[in-house]
Length: 260
Length: 212
Image 1 (cartoon, rainbow over the protein chains, first blue to last red):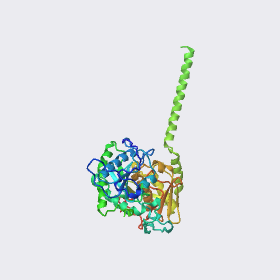
Image 2 (image 1 turned 180 degrees about the horizontal axis):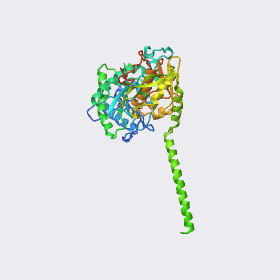
Image 3 (image 1 turned 180 degrees about the vertical axis):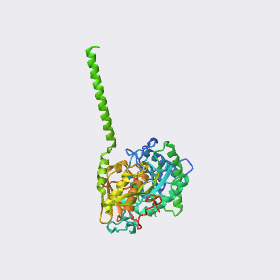
Image 4 (image 1 turned 45 degrees about the horizontal axis):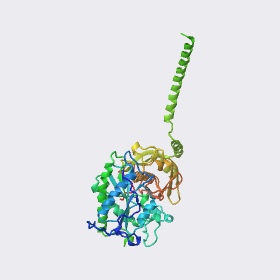
């Protein structure tokens, strides 16, 4: 079980690419000439270990979800920071921020990628699934529902206008699906047995994030040896790093219209 | 043998005899209890289920979506009497989904869950109101919660026409998530198939959320 670290859950870990309007001071350069990691001008990566505090999440005989996801998120954080990415954790201790608090951490940045970590209760052991948010198409215009709701068009919200907090993810659904697909493809190479394609599911924790957002769920808490889950942390972190770098190289965009 | 000793022996013999008789009746009562409904919710479900079928219902092949492995669901053909009226028909197939899973590991919904109500609004919105057990006993996790929702959604979609979307309530209330992950504040789209439901088993489904 990872030890709790008492620090601010919304602390900026590496503010090298934090937008200036956030008012976060740049860290002073170290006096010693140590090897500097590459500095990416890309998005801030917000890592979200799910649950925490009194909400343990799924529980197995030897695994508690809230602790395992914190360990896995920290592994991903180190891997991303080594590549020069700015990383923010929604929690870095045994606290339990609300869904809105977690989204607010991400929404404080104009260019952000949000990755939420979960461990399932069920599913094929030692696999990982990547999810992006799926909105109901019929919810777009409740007054215009027809017998065939699928015929309703999806009208993206212009990001220059105010976004409804409850639907902040809607303009980023396409970017999130693309990110989820890319990440799932990389994860499948590194964690055999994982599905080849990502899934679009209404994961509550992603709905209010104004940026590309995915949830990763490892399977599962029923494993007898927690090291089976720990062993997936490193390949998962590598997959995240590669996917984030590739997404930047492939057009630069995290898909965030606010990052223009 | 002293008289007191004989009286004591007689009392003891009578006590043993009474004990044996009570033990037998106690055993019978325990057996009766073991076949009785194990919870109030199950008793309520039996009551509701009895009221959802009618002699006029036609016996058809319904497609009920249960788990077909640790991470997917698939339709199972079940011959059952179904009403032609959408609300009754929906109650019948959802009760079947809850109560008659072919095996315990094929359950997608908790055995104690009860469909408390089912309504259809004029715009085709279906509202399914389940008991607390659906939220409290569904295993926590994106996958398990999505399988639960998909089994409800696909079972309705494949057996009841005229429904455009689904809203899931827990004990009459809107809740934020099913068991901590899947968002229940919104609606789930229902896409009634244009073609009639085939009577032969179909290929395994993918999770409905999976992109096609």
